[in-house]
Length: 172
Image (cartoon, rainbow, N blue to C red):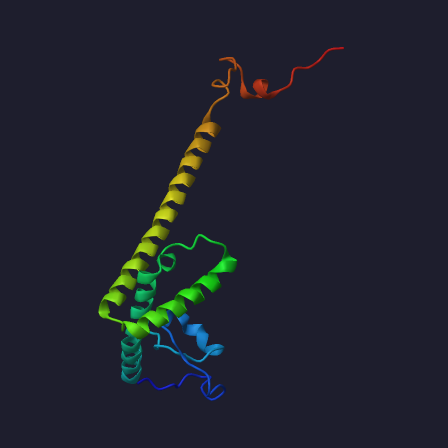
């Protein structure tokens, strides 16, 4: 069992602590969070603490794997309005909790979660690649458009650029 030695443990002793990973380093300033220590040169005690956090986070990954396995809307890009997200997420969490109470979590749920996370990462990379290709196509068209010469636009072969861009003088 992990010790609850987060900064706000004394301020909110009756509140739940959140078990998070290294990404959520700033969470401890406003919530009770149990986090692994971050850095290159950490002590043996901190390494031991990180191992305990990682060990306990396995159950969290298994839960999210079950959540993604049961409810497709949780494992794919959310396409509905932002105002619905919280309600749908909470509903899926509650239903998953009921499911877990009848069917305990297993290792394959964690594997499912990692697969679904990789799928979302690949989807994001694909979207970035599509956007990059569209931008390159746009820029190439723009370069072609800008590189067209006045001769391509129907100017006289011997005319200078200045002569082509001047308005004819009108005599009255």
